[in-house]
Length: 208
Image 1 (cartoon, rainbow, N blue to C red):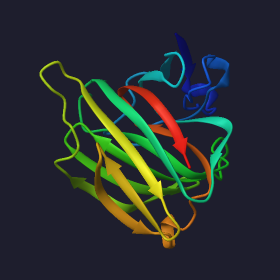
Image 2 (tube, one colour):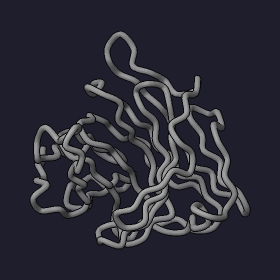
Image 3 (cartoon, rainbow, N blue to C red):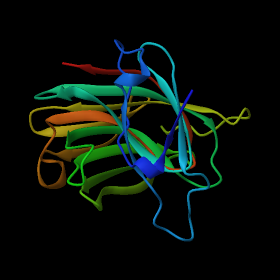
Image 4 (cartoon, rainbow, N blue to C red):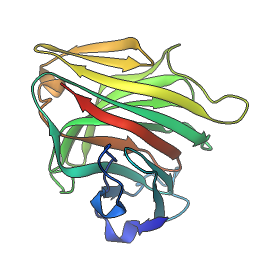
């Protein structure tokens, strides 16, 4: 297990099937700026889980990716997200796509996420600014934690010539045109895990 301190404010990456070494992962840590919802610890705990997976837990939020891994044109980005333990409040986690400069202040990407309360959301990030593409939306396709406290959700982003479909467990929960905040789909891919959240990512892959 590795511990990354928020004091270093460098970026973290998402596992792909060919990767088994922790040195291949990158993470950019985002410390909470909300005094009413602080990070309880300054560290992210990261454990490589073999080919195609990792587990991340801890205080601050993180954006995870692998340098050099990107997707262009028509593609499907997918991953299985297991919430190991519910957080004390609603936090989101999921896929990142259309990214650029993920480790820099001028980072840009779109992210599609789910939460333990059975909702999803789609957001766009440009530097330190974020905006809703689709706000927090309850949907029956999003699996909530069971009696053991865990939930498993398979997420996909299906990029076509003129539209993007957002899929949870085989169900299309939303579609956006390739315009406006979701005009750019070519670029880096990865995962986003909000703070105070213990999540295992597996089966992360790009299909063309």
